[in-house]
Length: 288
Image (tube, rainbow, N blue to C red; front, side):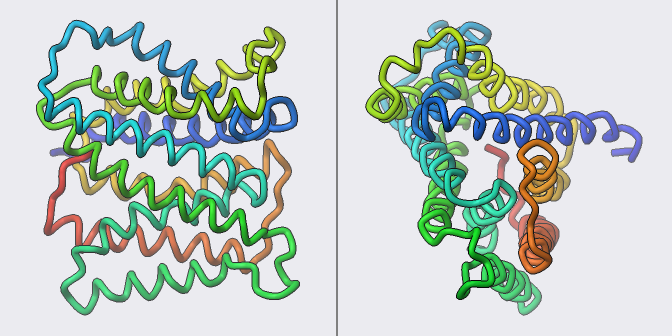
């Protein structure tokens, strides 16, 4: 594949990541109005309406095995979003994404076999250590926020595994069904915490913006880009998510991170890139 042939797909993936983190920043603006669970429910429900309307999954028949995979995929997605938005109530966006990124990083490092592979594990653990709230030096980092972000990371690992199974032989309609399943899971939590505020017409535009930026638009861009980009390159690009999250948090939410926190994010990004290059290249897993 010639280098110039992947420039446009790389731009699409990068733009999709920027949209995702911008959407997360906007979602945090919803917290004072509907809470973290309410914002999660709004994002997933509105995104599900958009994706179902576009991809019309009812036109496709699934057997029982495939339905089970889709439900597990959607369940992991719903839990991941609930935990992630709960984490955002307590810690800055950049740190939440970096901690959440330990989930897919763990999936990649599960295949560690050679001495170089363990370098990425040490680097990831060092980055993780720099993000933890040690003593009073990082008072803006709540322990419960860290726990929520790590739970989101564990769900992200499940999302990758179940997404690969659900996506085998499928298409865009699988993502629509997965998001719809996630919305069904998140909606009761949102309704319990926000109640009728979820139906307030004044917040629906912001909720729709979050849904489009965080889910619908990035997914559409990835659908265009993925057939034309190597899986390893896609993994390397995705490693930039924590950096984009920190930038979005700074620009939109005015969240300033300490030098040690920035170093921790950089270490996790470096570990993810290294694992993608050395481990994922040997395994060549499918992209969920």
